[in-house]
Length: 300
Image (cartoon, rainbow, N blue to C red; front, side):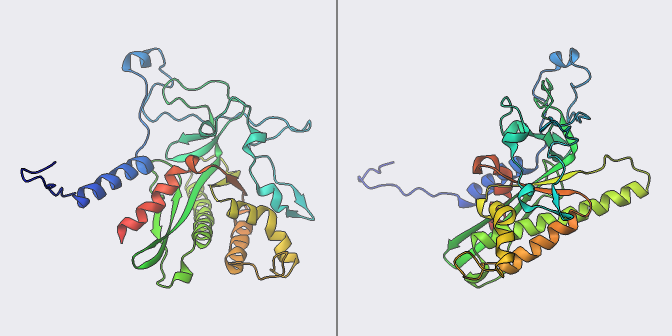
């Protein structure tokens, strides 16, 4: 706004309030459970599914493939000489779901967890607007980010299990040298954290079963990411690197080889109990994990 003398009146921006507002928006996106989307009047005609936080679990299973009935959405892992083929760890949503499913509709809130939708589900709940889901197929969304600021590089990870889930992770990656902080290292770090926590989830469920809790057996952990580098490395390039002495096709050492070795070990540990799939999605379909990663920079 111009002053009486023709100069500009300086405008003060309250950066603290802007930061607090951004933090609030991100927390709402990453942590707050979904609420009912229909009116109380409509719920009267929808009694079985008209409750806040309704949970829909399907006992139906995925479509048939090549004449073989598939017991789970992600299918059973293909093995060669007793080992799972890395390429089979790639989750191809387009092969699993009919064309009527959009990418967001393939993910279902069941409690505070994200699960795969059932491909055979044909109608949505009038309350939560979701198809039926598979409790035995948990989705873990991950994201790694690296930024360059005034004081050098910083990186962080986000791991998202579901809205309101106390296990959601927003964590900076330690280290002062720039060599600790790259986007690729951040993505691998997020993957390693997800794999480590997957083993923890399995162990926790075992303890709950020992105490008499009835739980549906887990079949699959689907690690969702927007990193093509991560997915293709773990499902396509890893076997070639190993056969080539951890060198690329150009004969140079594989970058972050030690982290890939740790990831391979982590996958093998989880696959002693359940299978692991990697799902590559566009960035706009991985916003929750992205927000959690970005939130970590605000903690510093």
